[in-house]
Every structure is written in structure tokens, then in C-alpha cells.
Image (cartoon, rainbow, N blue to C red; front, side, top):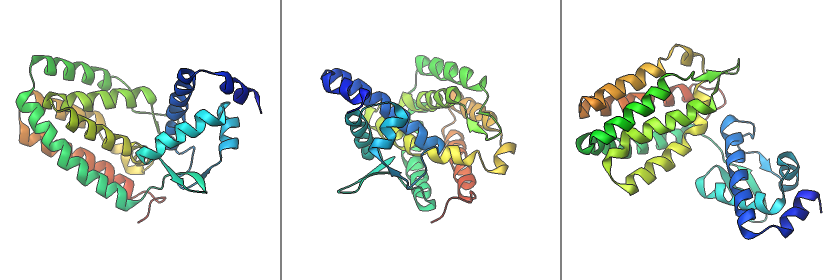
Length: 234
């Protein structure tokens, strides 16, 4: 038994849950960035060494990720990274638009001054952060966080915990595809900050139809870019 495993044997239940949560975040990020390749086998011993962690919390982390689709758990075969496909991103995009356009409609109709203030504040941060970094055009983690905060604030006025829960789950599932879309050459010419500013302006103007149209085009542009990526197939 290696040192991390020995430490985990004596750790409290809370310590184990905390370690599992940290590992869940790290593995999820490595799946999103492509460090862990779609469909690849996740061998617990190798991963434990890579993350300098025990097998017990790592297994718990992978089980949690299996519940979200990032990881596939197969009886007797262990874990593997979830596959990506053109069919899936099309399905996710259609479902997002059905749910998020309704949430956006409610949010614009019902949102109060506090909602406007949060929306402006989250956009202010998002608008001032570079989108990508390095020659590989990887999405910056701080931009990703600001991006999620803005889209969450945009819908938060709907005052429906279930709608927000579903939108969060679907947004999670697009993370890998969004990263892929930035590798496509056409993404260099895309004005992502401009798309977000237009969404902000339409929401603050309480123009429901324009805001929903802009949101649809925002997501569909990402999907079109992903579908042109050579690694993705039906």
C-alpha cells in the first residue's frame, strides 16, 4: 500500500469526501481539456499515481463523474472516459435551447433590479478577460468561470430552482464540446465578447424575442464549429 492509500485508510469520512470532491474536479477538468481522451480506459492504479491520491477517493470521484456522463462505468470492466459524438452535441444543443429559452423568457419577464445588477456585474468581469491562451487556443479557466457566472445570472431571474438545475447540468455537458470548438480555425474570427454584449443589451432592454434568438445563435454557432472538428463523428 503506497503512502496516499495508507493516509486514506486512517482518514475520516469527511476527509475522504473532501479528497473525492477535489479529485472529481481535477479529473473533470482533464476530461474537458482533452488530457484524458474520450473513450480511453481509466485505470485506477495509474490515475492514483498521476494525481498522487488514494484509490478509494479516486473511485468515488469517478463514480460521481459517471453519474454526469463524463465517465462511463461498466460492470467488471471499470471506468472509461465518456465518448463524444456529433449526435450527442446536436441533442444537447436542441435540449438546451428548449429549456434555456424558456428560462430566459421568464428571467427577462420577472427579473428585478437585483437581477439586472448581478447580470451587469458578471458581464463586466467576463468582458475583460481574454478567452483563450497559448498556441493550442485553450479556454482560460478564469474565463470559463466568468462565462458560467454570466450565463447563470442571465437565467437566474426565472426563479425556478428546477430550471436552473437542468440548465446547469446541460451546460456541464457542453464543456468538452466548447473546448473543441476553439480549435477550429473559424473560431478565430468569431466575436464571442460581442455575442455576450448583445445578449446583455437585449436582456436589459427586456426584448425577449431578440434575446432568445441571440442565445440560440450563440449556442448553434458553437455546435456548428464543433461539427467541423475532424475528431468528431456520428
